[in-house]
Image 1 (cartoon, rainbow over the protein chains, first blue to last red):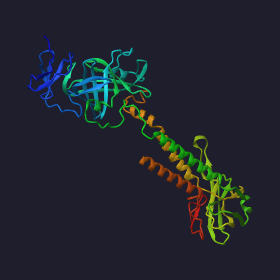
Image 2: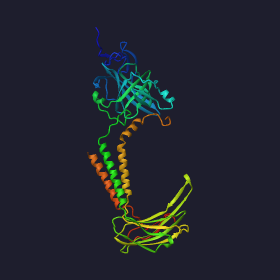
Image 3: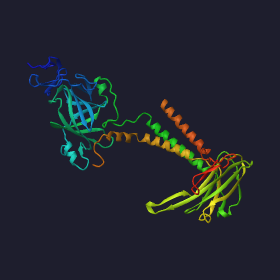
Image 4: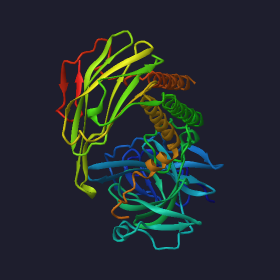
Length: 423
Length: 54
């Protein structure tokens, strides 16, 4: 007559331990005293690892849940640590057992949960190890089930906590390495070449429903996990359309402001010496500024002009001056220029009517006296710059919304240890 | 829904503000102009785009 053992007493400390794991279990580690027991040899004590610190995980031995319609039980817990460059990464693996589907792994990493299974149909190319990755010049790629997987990262892990049942003999301090690859594009599973004594290839997928499935306390995922698929946030479509509409509206306003400026009327065009003492021009509307613009085709010279502007009521609106200077030199990449051939006086008209401008050369470089000066006046000058700035801000918001998927993919690959120099 | 309303309100405010400032040329008028504006000095070196200020 045969039977199934459902519980044992630890042969080291006597604590009651459930036996949950099926016929392939070879090791059971007591959660009370840390004794490793040989499940194939009457639970003989193999070694004792006292003082292990339980890793942070909401999952416990004996919890059950359905994965893809198949009942699984948590039978083991392993705490891993990877240390490199003064930094430390920790994650927890829970061994899962199904009476009909065998063994799998539930991983807790930065609050994210993942599901891992062994791959029986290995990719054709050679087994990847951290050493082989170090030696190659191009990013390693493997094809599995018709999909291309690119190298993501290598890790060297160490076990620092063990509890429960396992189909192998894990122990505290045991080391191993793994090389992981991910498909490009939107797919988000990971192929891992694990080398921890025996070599295995595993496939891991994101499994956010794990806590609910096993009735564990909900986790708070931190950051974007490499395996995390992109999920568009609520309202993305709305915000995209909204900011696109705002951008178009701001651009339309900027163009309308420019298009509705008044015609540019020339008040004078000729040598500075011929400037009349007084010039007048009509202003019909006082709602928008008026601009007087000077242009002189100067080369290596400068000129200054006195300007006095009086409104129709006789009020002086400006008693000032404007200078124009333009210097340049060099050639090719060393070419430089300084100053501008343009100067302007923009004022706010007080009343409609005829405005008087008194203008005369103040100090004029001899080289500038021969260059013709053009003076124009333009009504209805707006400041389209504000609308251009608003359009720019809205466009940035639009692109930010639109690029959410791309930014998510960048965040997923951010942890890759393959550097650009290697590419 | 509240976030959407907030985003819509803020962006409409920005658009309206920018539109108003653009149309009426806010910031386009030179400092040295205005009723009874008189020159009291000069900034910048001679011949280098100097602007006289009140």
